[in-house]
Length: 389
Image (tube, rainbow, N blue to C red; front, side, top):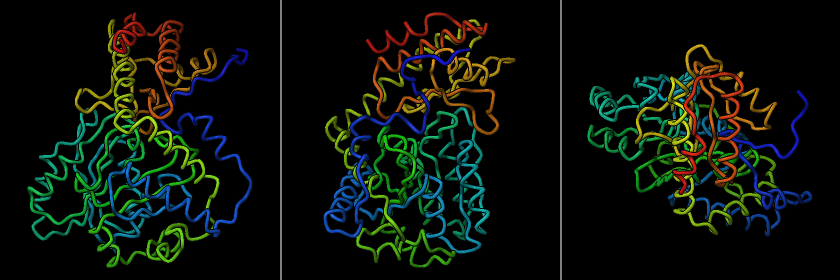
């Protein structure tokens, strides 16, 4: 099949489309990262990022993907043998669990139906059973990118409080920040981890941890080895981040990303993501006729506004559909992760995205379903248009 012409429709859930103005902002020569003008830029970006996070706490940045921010959260908050309560959500809660165990931490899991998400009552029960308060933190993935299922952090905080448990609340915001409402301080979240390549619309390569007062208190007691990720070392730096060379171009891009968010208005950003996510779900509901593909998340209240995971009919390969959409129509879709490999494909609808881009993606998916003879109901694109109207 010859390479399709035209600009690729990139509908992955991360990395996401990078706006041209951010590419232009990053396109600059090397800069002395210790000069006052650059330090002022870092401080300005940090203050504005705090507003997106909804926090007055500390924000520490590092050159890494979101996994680096996970690692920073573990080594800065805990000591060998500490116990964590991980809320099962999918591929990324499993990854966080694996990392914690490699650092010598014990992890207890609250099981969940991955098509619905964790029950806050089960979290409360697990904490009530921990009479000795051995559990040091509750860890959740706010938006599980692999399944398209969200977890309500405020409800988990309410469960912790109802159990009268002192555990910290840690939240992964990697695929939710800048797409779905997140209010760190209001919801009583003690630490949030995030990355540059999704709702912030930047290239992959910069991550951060946002830490509240309880988190900083825990940090002062933590004894896991650390150096590059050490918040105490970062606090001695003029940037209050980065143990080593600072990625200067990324901050010029971050300043432009934050300007775009501020220009649109954060609540308008959330409304746009809800509108586009609703359109994608309307299309999939139409396709689900004739025993066709289905939305993986079966709880409408938990369905993500940043990514939709779509479960293929039995006997049909999601990877074959992805290859066809890319090779024939130049549309890049997200694949299934872990146990969902080959069973689901994912449509990312977050970041720099509008209605025509979503409708173009949905049109290519619907044509691919037809081309490959995959059972589906017709009229998905029309259903999306009706939803947007």
